[in-house]
Length: 190
Image (cartoon, rainbow, N blue to C red):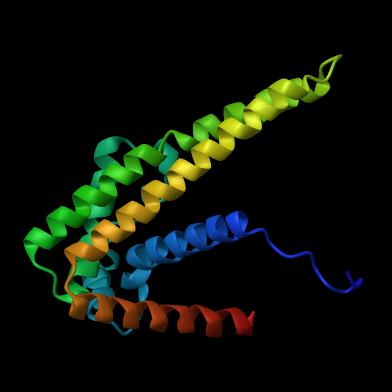
């Protein structure tokens, strides 16, 4: 292989990367559409929250530190804003909140498990004898967990997409494209 050519990515790894990227982009798109400055949603958000100073002092908790009720409340608020943008019904909004809340609850303990793994990895690497079997077992366990999270995210995104009509998905896609463009322009200035 020439020096300037990278080795090809294995098909299985390529599929995992594609699924993870797709899930991440779609998931992020659902949660960030309301930030588009000229959208109805942003105007609603600005009127309801910014002008009433609802964010002052308590809006910046880490996800892992939120209670289940706080997670559901935040998801409901975000979905409410996106629902305005795509003219979703109350029934659609309730279904989407239920789907996203379930996946968020599944993901909540992940941070704690990853921190515990970091400490466990550290202990294994500073031990008198390196336990390769334990290191491999931890690697396999973490990969399985990441794979399950990826599957859950893809399933949730597909479930949310099925709740929406094709026209609503089209509007949502347009807002995601606008948002990407806005962030791309903002990124170029810095």
